[in-house]
Amino acid sequence: MSGAVLQVGVGLSGSIARFLADLGLPDTIAGLAGQAIAFLAVFLVLFYVGRSVLLPLADRVMNSRDLESHAKKPIRRLVVVVLGFVAVTIAFGAAGYGDLLQSLATVAAAATLAIGFAMQDVLKNFVAGIFIYTDKPFKIGDWIEWDGHSGIVEDISFRVSRVRTFDNELLTVPNSALTDGVIKNPVAKDKLRLQVPFGIGYDDDVERATEIIIEEAENHEEILEDPAPTVRLTELGDSSVTLKSRIWIDNPSRADFVKTRAEYVQTVKERFDEEGIDIPYPNRTLGGELTVAGLDEVAPADD
Image 1 (cartoon, helix red, strand yellow):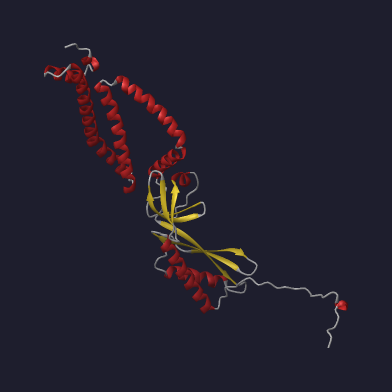
Image 2 (cartoon, one colour; image 1 turned 135 degrees about the vertical axis):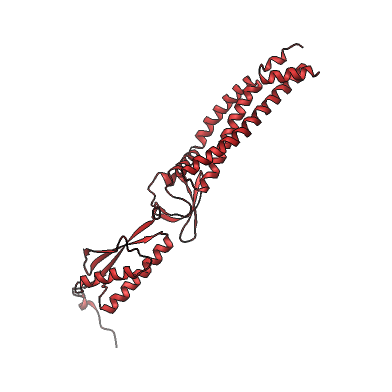
């Protein structure tokens, strides 16, 4: 046995090559086969053993952070990809592909640099997606508002989020657009405060109007008693006195918010009508005179 080829791998691959050579295989074939078998053996062991250990560990970490189900799937996939890369790298070394591994690393570094410049926006959105998963500013089913848009979140991925508007339009939003600016999530907490203004006339009884507004809030089953409804006089307008009601609803969604507000305003309006409380509208009085010039130049029509 010349041993020149069998020195390709001094560890696992070399041992396998020597074993194959003892079985009668030519040294060259034994060396190549030893490297290939060592590569596959190390990769498979590391990948499957690592997967059986890391995935349950990742699940426990994600469960401890109360991550949503939509966030767990891509994170598990990312763990598998990273594990596969590590397993391939170690398997290359175990197989004795030192020069090949170094060449691949150089090519991979150059490719990564080129891809990084070409995919800056994609990487930016990817990082933003990770922040959304970890910071949890919203989740699927939440009603959010940003940059003049609003809707219900239907899906969150690492690159984009999909939001269904209240006109039933589907918006595909880059994640960076949702992390670079201000996002309003009215339903992030268990309670939502609504502010509803009511205008009454200057001649109307402010105290009686306040009593009606509070009574109708207390009579509505969707409006909470604690915190209790409140009313404040907030503005003396040109044609009306503004009373602003502050009420709270539980487990809010946009549909509940719109329905509750509409029902509340309607009942207050009906009570105002019964009590003779006016809801005024702006009046404008136009004054002045009309002058017609040049009457002397107007010739009478011929009979």
